[in-house]
Amino acid sequence: MKNHMLYNKKILLGVTGSIAAYKAAFLVRLLIKLNNEVKVLMTESAKDFITPLTLATLSKNPINLSFFDAQSGKWTSHVDLGEWADLFLIAPATANTIAKMATGICDNLLLATYLSASCPVFIAPAMDRNMYMHVATQTNIEILKKRSNIIIPAVFGELASGLTGEGKMADPEDIIKQITPHF
Image (cartoon, rainbow, N blue to C red):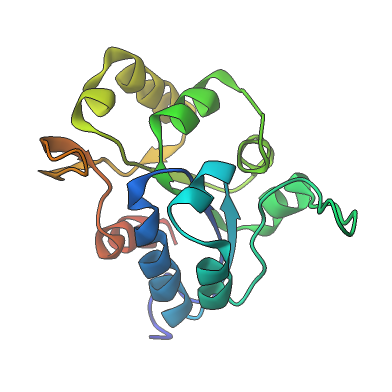
């Protein structure tokens, strides 16, 4: 796979609190398989859906959850993370995180890193149909597009709520296909 364009890169993966967070494990595996270095940022609510241990094991890197470790006092520099990455992928991105990104709210490590990132940012929304189609969410997505973020559109399918419609996060293989041409 050395000839693959998405090879030997530094990828920052942001995981937010969505049922689609389980797909982050598959994304990490695909990225590692292509010999990329992957560092994962998780929001507190993401831990309700997938464990930091799972993503740390797959990425071979410690998970970044907060600005500092309360036990050791070690500080996690959002600026260093934002400068380190060749690409920042936020998948899944909830309506809450998308709204905060669009308005510049910076109340967790993932959002602070987003505001500090100097690399391209790809966003893969994941939420229920009505949340995804809501005018507020669609407006926030348009704001993010205007700011040069690349949106990987949610797809049509069966949603965790039992409804069918747009809102499902794109499959990991499709996300890889969409970020690859960037390189």
